[in-house]
Length: 102
Image (cartoon, rainbow, N blue to C red):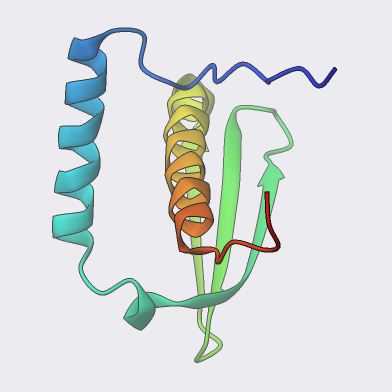
């Protein structure tokens, strides 16, 4: 039997789900054209003192953009990352053509 993994990032109540949906919609509206902001490389790392998570992105033009998240908000980053990747996977799955017959 295959166990279904827990979706620890999923909202626990209808109110949380509504707030999350609103937040995600607001993000998409302000972000704009995703394809126009494509990056082709990234690196992640921890600061020597363990207080920051470093994110570095390389754009198609070769420019590098660096950001650091303080330890206190890394859990929020991973939760939002998980929510976004979960939605991405659901959308990709919905686009997949059925294979074979059931």
